[in-house]
Structure formats: structure tokens, C-alpha cells
Amino acid sequence: MLVVFKLLGSLALLMFGMKSMSEALQKMAGPQLRHVLGAMTTNRFTGMLTGMLVTASVQSSTATTVMTVSFVNAGLLTLAQAISVIMGANIGTTLTAWIMSAGMSFDITSAVYPAFFLGIILIYLKKYRYIGDFLFGLSFLLLGLGTLRMTGTEMNLGENQTLLDFFASFDPTSFWTTLIFLLLGGVMTFCVQSSAAVMAITMILCSSGALPIYQGIALVMGENIGTTVTSNLAALSANTQARRAALSHMFFNFFGVFWILFIFRPFIDAVCGLVGYDVTMTKEVSGATAFMANAAKLSFVLAAFHTCFNVANTFILIWFVPQIERLVCWAIKPKKVDEEEDFRLHFITAGFMKTPELSVLEAQKEIRSFSERMQRMFGMVQELLNLSSSVSSKKDSNESEFNKLYTRIEKYESISDNMELEIAKYLENVSDAHLSDDTKGKIRAMLREVSELESIGDSCFNMARTINRKYSAKQDHFNEKQYSHLHQMMGLTDNALTEMNRLLGGRKESYDVHRTFNIENEINNYRNQLKAQNINDVNNHEYTYAEGTIYIDLINECEKLGDYVVNVVEARMGIR
Image (spheres, rainbow, N blue to C red):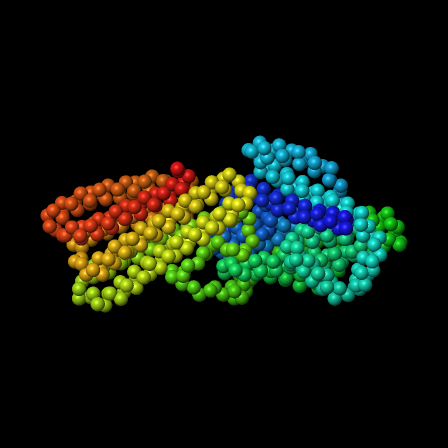
């Protein structure tokens, strides 16, 4: 039982180390990697290289896939470019297998303790704490591998007759044996939700001499399929592009397994030759010492196969990216949903796997969508004002159109409330994770942004209610001068909303915040001018006091909406 618990505990250390190391790397280089991913994908080949480098840097193909899907949703990448990035991510993730094979081949457990000590010093220095987090993650990974290696040695798997008899019961030359181990590798990966853990188990079994190399590589091929099944199940509740990206990932690995089965043994023999492993060596002929020395190379054989398999598969499929794109688009049709009328988050997906640092990117895209929706809502208010001014001869035909538009604005107000709650809830969940100070600051700013955007929706609905109240009471229309002033004020407000969306849709470093402040000053000055003029117009009996009150209510609401816009801009720019 103690050996079993050591085995399980070392696997847990391995998985935790991988997760910690990946998250630390993303905290150190997350924003830069996102910019690289957006800029270096001009064609399928640069996309593939970018996916490979980014995945090798953050040690997570899932993280690269999530970033890629977010860019596709935002229109920064095409689905074809995303597919090439995902192909590169499959090559980049093989670096993990090489790290693990090194950990299996050498006793490096004694080296992790100085790394732990150095890591805790760097964490307390704060400035270098992400390097400390990375060292801790890498140390846990190597400690888990070292413990796993020692536990495998203690278990004497190569001498365990029951285990040897079990593997010997499968005909090594049979095609069905390969399929059985392929399925077993997929099921194990799906169950433990970690291809790294299954790869470690495979390395232990092979390097101990218990598991023949052909069955071991069949397990590795199954791991490739198992990890794509997991991501496809996770993407079921995600948006269309996320599901298409996950399906392209699955197609990539299934196709690779399909063609490799036709040249299974020659391909493995070629990889073994590259590493220097003798496939024909047996314990009876060569002796136990030579056999175990030869078997010790098997962890490198598995890593080399993983790399060669993904490189070869990418080389074949990189020429057929447009065809793969058409295939996944044909297989997964977009849902026919009227986004104008139905509340739906476009970028935040609950099911698709992600890391906290990358979740912030999705939230930023969702806030941009929220902001654009609020400007559309304000456009409806302007249209409602125009409908309310229709001449009496057209009043009957326009009344249903007026009521329909007012109902739509009312629905938008409800949508804005839901969007605020959903985005804020998502950000609160993300903030529970261990984040960098920069990311924590972004989350605080985004929570302020969604609150102010919801207030913009409230202002739009207040204006719509004011217009509806005047229209329903059958009051006289505003005179031409009032309409002219209202349109001018609303035009300034719409300009402010346009500047806000320009900021939220781009990079804040290139945005001139004085544009927003200048528009806000114009709105305030014009509001003060109209309030003074309104008193004079009422005193001169140009319109009634009641009409003047409604007119100024609309002017004041535009000014308040402008204040909310300034608050959003200040939050995004980091101005308190």
C-alpha cells in the first residue's frame, strides 16, 4: 500500500508541478506571447512556428489553443491561421516529454532541493516571484519524476512475473494488440485528465523492461487521442469557433494515428535507430545488465517518437489547412441566434479549458462587445426620438413601430444588466486564482468598466422612458430648435461612445485620452448653455414648463452618459 501511495503521490507532484510551471511562465510572458501570437501568424507556416514556440514557452498546448480561439472570435485571426497554430502547438508540447525523459533517465531529486531554496528566496523578493514560482513548479515536476522513477525501481516491475505474463499474453505482432493499447492509452488519459501523467507511467513501464516498446508507443498514440477527446468535451458548451478549433485538433491527431498504423513498426524502428535503442535485444541472450541499460533508453525513444510523430503529421497536413477548415465548418454549423435580441456571451466560455491569465483576455473581448452593444442601444434611442417627432398624419402607422422599438430598448436594458452580472461573476471566479499583480489590477479595472457600461445602459433606457412618456401623453412635439439641440447633444454623446469603443478595441498605449476629455468638456459646456437658454425660452412662452422639463431631462441624461463614458476610459487607462 505504501508503494501504491508513493506512486499516486509522485504522479500528483508531477501534475501539480506541470500546472505551476505553466502558469508561472504565462505570468512572466503572457501579454508578450499574446502579441506575438496576434502578429506572427500571417500565413500557415509562420502560424505553425508561432504555435510551436508559444507552446514550448508556456508548456501548455491548451493555453495556446485558448489564446488562438480568443483571437479568432475577435476577428484577429482566421480559422485557417488558428488551425496552423494548433498544429504548431502539438509540436511544442512534445518538449514536455523530453523534460520527463531526462528526469526518468537521471537521478535529479538531489538537485531539486537547492532549486526549492532559491525559489522561496525569489518569491519573497517579490520582484522575481514569478521566477520563484517557475522554479517551484519545475522542482515539483522533477521531484515527482524522480520519486516515480525510484518507486518503479522499488516495485521491480521488470521482475514482476504477473505483470510480465499480462503483457506477454498480447501477441506483439498482432494489429489488434496495437489497437487495444491505443484505446487503453486514450481511456487512461481521459480518466486522469493529464497526458503527462500517462506518459510518465508509460516511461516507467517501458524503462523497467516490463512493457515492450511497440505497446508503449501505442499507449503514447492513445494519449494523443485522449487529450483531444477531453478538449472536445470541454468545448461542447463553448461557442462555434471554439468547437471548430477543438475538432480540428482532434482531426489532426486522429489522422496522424490513422496513417502511422500503416507503417507502425518501420516508423518505430527508425525512431529507435535514431536514439540508439536495440529493438532485438533480449534479457536471455544479452544478460540482465545489458538489457536494463538498453531499456533505460526507452524513455528517450518515447519522447523521440512523440516529436517525430507530430512533426511528420504537421508536415503532411500543413498543406491541407484550407480543406481542414472547410471540413470543420461543414461539421459544426453556427447556431442561428439573433444576437441583437438574445443575451449571449460571445467570448467567455464556461466549458473550454483555460488558465486565469488567459481568462482575462476573454473578459476584455466580452467587455468590448458589451460596449459596442451599448452604443447600438444609444442609436436606438436617437431613432426613437425621430419616430416620436413624426407628423400627426403618419402617427397611426408609426405608433406600432415606435412601441416595437421601445420594447427592444427595454430588452437591451435587461441584457445590459445580465451582461454586467455574468462578466462580473466570471471575473470574480478568475480573481480567486493565484494571479500576477498586473492581472489583478486589470480585473479591478474591468469590474469598474462593466459597472459603468451598465450605467450607460440605464441612461439610455431613462431617455427612452422620457421620450415614451411624452409620446404616450400625446403632448405637443418639441419645436425645431429643441430637436436641433437634442440631435447636436446626442451627436456629441455618440462621438464619446465611439472614442470609448476605439479604446476598448485597441491598445491603450496608442490611444490619446484627451480626445475623450475634450468631448466631455464640449458636452458639459453645451449642457450649461442649453439649461440657461431653456429658462429664457420658457419665460418667453416658446413652450410650456412641462415640455421644458422633459427636454432638459434628456439633455441632462446625455451629460450623465458622457460621465459614465469618461469613467470607462479612465478605468481602462488606469486613471483613478
